Image (cartoon, rainbow, N blue to C red; front, side, top):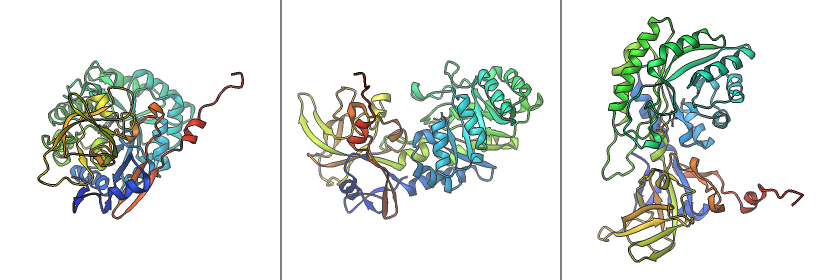
Length: 421
Ligand SMILES: *Cc1c(COP(=O)(O)O)cnc(C)c1O
């Protein structure tokens, strides 16, 4: 559920007409709903209660500091995968004690930064990383709280580019080698082992792969405890999928996911962490764009819009579907017309949808791509020297630009011509 609904035929973000935002900030832009972000975060905290838990928002899905502050103020933790994301969490006022650091390639500088800020835990992904972190923490006269990310070798049954829990993926250590690696970690002076971490992939539309993975984590908890390790915290990762195509998909709900967690690991007396990104941010955002031209092609008609693959890369990168809706609702009796919806970038891959049935549209009409809050703005680039588009946050009847569109001057001034040229 989200808070993007038609009122009297006009698309609203909460109590604000989307067209009013377009008139003020220009298109294209991203718009996020505070009420939707809040609701999705709350669904997870409710689903895990009464287990002791922390819901750590995966910043990589939507990293605007205003959004992080909103979630942080509700009590959310943050899952970061780089020093940059760590700095964003801190800038949003989230204390280190609620930040977890994931990722396969943490540098020593990033480790130092996070240790100085009193990081809650590192999710360590390899043996060389264990050794590096122990050295860094020892040199600082401290110990680093860690979990080790295990790769449970389950098939997440999602897109191959976002599956992370099979044995041929780069993530974590094979669960079959866990005893050995935990034994090494226990010997390293700069580390304090506190738990286990697992994350099997993103946009999972079934609970079954989670169930397989979490059962393996439960078995591993008992085994590692019997080998003398303290396992008091389980980080179960993120990955719950969202319905990108509303007409024909119904992925599992946070409530059922929570019930599964209680059933598989609830008896172990561990504090539970989860790291949802997409399910909190995905349906909390729209990408709003304007039709530049309607071009009649030989085979299909093209809707050429002012957003492009550099603004929202998911369709061209993953073949992803985003529902597209008109900002002014079509009259009930209108017959849909099939369009290829494309952007202005000079690549055939700059295609959002092929033969998509939409109400007939004309030049200057506004459209909205749904479910664009996650992996949208964060993956944007300036390809074709197109400025990064603004982000807007709506709360009730107020809205604010939370990242402004850069000027062309700002963009061009980042390049320098060497004196010798
Ligand atoms: C990407 C990622 C997440 C979030 O995944 P979603 O599908 O957005 O929920 C959580 N944890 C880790 C380690 C990740 O890499």
